[in-house]
Image (cartoon, rainbow, N blue to C red; front, side, top):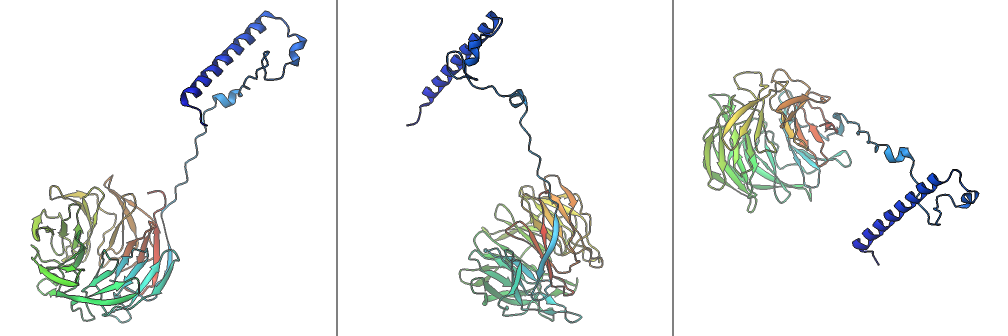
Amino acid sequence: MSTSPVRSAASVVFGLTLLSVFVLVGCSSQASSTAAPASASSTAQGASPSGVASPTPLPMSATLAPSATPSPAPVAAATWRPAGKMVSPHSHHTATLLPDGRVLVAGGLINDRLDGRASALAELYDPDRGTWSATGQMRGARWGQTATLLANGKVLVAGGFDDARRPLDTAELYDPDNGRWASTGRLTTGRGGHAATPLASGKVLVTGGGEEDTTTDLVRSASAEVYDPADGTWAKIRQMVEARGGHTATPLSDGTVLVAGGGSAAAERYDPGTGRWTATGNMTESRWGHSATLLPDGTVLVTGGCACSDPGAWKTAELYQPDSGTWIVTEPMSKERIFHSAVPLTGGPVLVVGQGGRENPHVSAELYGPDRGQWDTTAKPAHTREGATATMLSNGMVLLVGDYDGDRSAELYDPGSGM
């Protein structure tokens, strides 16, 4: 039977009172006698003359020493390490994290000739085993396509280019359960260099891209359409305000989609509820081949790209403020980058890694801290890669794969504990 709190408190008070009496008696006896009587030695050590045991006092070091402060755990530095070799080379491909933690790498260019050729090959990376394995081939060879994970766990691959750089209007679905591909309708127009964005409804918004614009040497279009997984159909929607290709399309916290760049500094937003496009503030730079990342506070970080007329690339970065529709310049990157990857890590930092200018590739990576608005260098990968992808894994690491020169190696970025 448990003791009530009131009864326990009474016992403590009684014990403390009794202990005080013992101390007073002991002090009084010591003051009134000049020598301890011989019979006192017969009293058991730690017991009072009345025969009731008194608590043994702790040493002064135990009662006065401060509690020990544990040493801080050592900080582990960020590192890159090998992640095996892919079954076949890929570049300008897609890489999609599946619900079970594996990564699907599909299509792209294989540079076994001087101009490369489109591939239908696909494979899977298993982070638990650190292994690569072939899976079913796509029904059509393609590069520059988009890949979108659907709510049902399947992957929608749409558009892209063939060997002759012709835009494709075909789409197919990958089923991770059986490793097979199945056709799923046709886009309303052929697209390459487009963007695909999952909507809250489960549908997929596809924007821009298309055939090459001979007046600008860019692949761009103002057309847009929506894919409905429920019946596997494509439906044309209102055109964007601007023609775009090599742009970004970022879903915002309020359900709208921010579309930016792709041959200009213009930006606009799509509202799935009304089906309308609305122009928003222009970026501070004209960008093509840049990256866009939604940050935890709802703003969007845009990095790099180029003005298309310049063979170089930008180091600059800026932030989109959804509430005001304005852009704010933030600290520039340490290196120029185009067609690079930007991956949000656990805890908020954004890892940016990948190609430099079109004529100045480099091996480097850096981290953007949204709380400070600053960039920090981090460990660099082992290889320069063109047309690579970086994918955040379920374990917090980042998988980097692909290279136009046919390098089948893969690397893993471990952010360590010093983020």
